[in-house]
Length: 335
Image 1 (cartoon, rainbow, N blue to C red):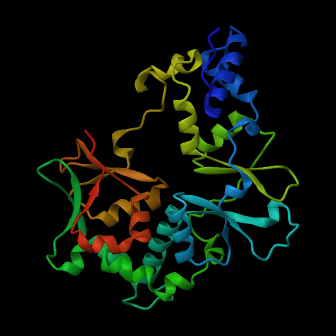
Image 2 (image 1 turned 90 degrees about the horizontal axis):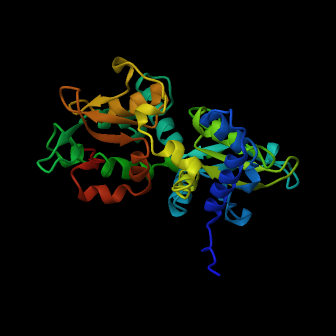
Image 3 (image 1 turned 90 degrees about the vertical axis):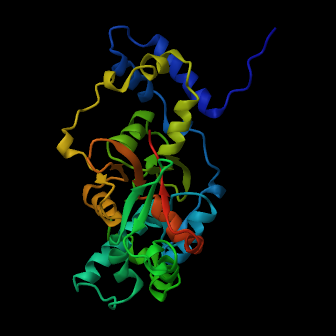
């Protein structure tokens, strides 16, 4: 008798949805059937990260230590643990937020804007004050091979290094080393500690990750004092990739994007930058519009030639020294 090959935990979830899909009420639409299936699966069924592998950032960690921890563990965010909370505190009192690479970058940009307006205490000429002016000197350009890069009007080595000496100075400054992550956790674009309970459903989890733009969701037991799991957008995408070939997935996974009923947006409402605009403009738009990335359009504004994401800043924060050797920062090229 032929035995089935071992399934991954993600594939097990897909087959569980398949079983529920087959017995769902026939009068339901495909979307209603899918919602019904996800409503019947608890979050506790999602593949678990062992509690000892959940990375936490203590609230007294500096920005420098936080960036190093996130980089070393190859993660984009982590829960902030309140070091002043008692050992037996429940998760409500134990955690004060989620720190993200994007949040650190946006907070630095916010401080730069505030300093430039004279509303922050940083001195003129400090790294955080210079962030906006330095990024403002860089624009996008296309190479003969079609790649999109950032370049500057100035030919000086100092101006050309958007991630070199400037970010190295920033990440070695006392400001960067001494600012505690707990001190700014509630200040600017910081994710709340919105936790799922193990009894919550997949449907609730998917709604929070999609409709409410949460990047990661801790999973806790009510009354418990530790994080049982962390579910990220990436892990959900990985789970869906394991479901290819199943009938419930194929019922919509093989459709074209225009057939999914996604909301249409007027062209003038699209968030984008042109290749001749400063790099700073891209990051300002991300901050103002609450998006994580923007397409880079050609000069005519009719064709996407690349993409820049807030995640790109993480490389400048985590490894600024490598940019000393490069004059340009290459963006993702799109066909």
